[in-house]
Length: 396
Image (tube, rainbow, N blue to C red):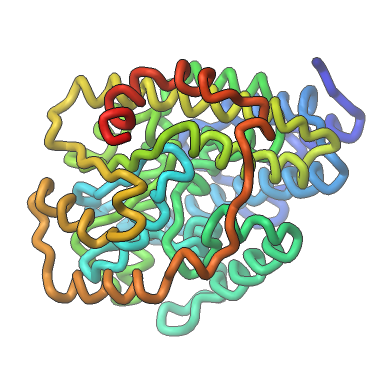
């Protein structure tokens, strides 16, 4: 149902936002990477459909402008330092899986290996350095990111039970994809059906090419700080649907797929999305939030299964949530064995230290039920039948 309002139309005018970002930065070159169509569809959906509250409208408008400013700053940095695009990105380890499958824990254990790069939350939130950044001093993006995380948890303390928020810990690069205006971030904040349907029909290659540019940019920044590593650890549920594109843009990538019964993951993730809808929207139907998330994850999982069947099996390693939760290092050791990576004493010690310092019981319990979001067990079993038959039912 159309929900266009005068406030939404005024807030999300394409040319106004593009010009405001340029005025804020004093820059005008957005680069040659395509983004205008994606931006246009998103803004149309925000103008005409999104049931935004005044707060949500203000926050999403600011978020779009920040993405445009990030694109402008990134192009400016590359103009001044063209060697950024010479950064070689070796085959990364890529953690994929439905949300709520232990993928964050696994990413952070892998990233604790001193041979690995990962993007911390402050880096994916602010990938372009602030003007006052000095490579030999505390990066000014860190305290700003820490303040944002603190504000988020103060506004919604329940988020602490859903995700281990930490500005200085590795996090997923979904926020980097957001700057291509092709990501699942907007639909996590508010109901934008036209944009959501448009995304489903797109070739995401431009988004992943732009993501690689950000990985090069972040690696160059790390090099300025004296950080040189062997490989990247990437992670996002978003990648589940785009394995073919991921392999094309990051040749040699190896995928670690985290598994958990969708009867547990889908309502858990729906709870997270619905909390965001409550913050950003005037209306927040939990059944609709749940339906959209279930459909997105079922679609993504089917695509990942099909991609896996098309490529060599040795490009995948599987991790099961119930196994990894009590003994993640043992499972990482198995992943390393599959991919031919040595488990060095230094890597093991760093991983053991991370596990010791980050027990799950430090965080509150995330409580939810299937019924909260209009789900039934039979419905989820049907929607994920192929996946459950292949990866879940044999281990029940």
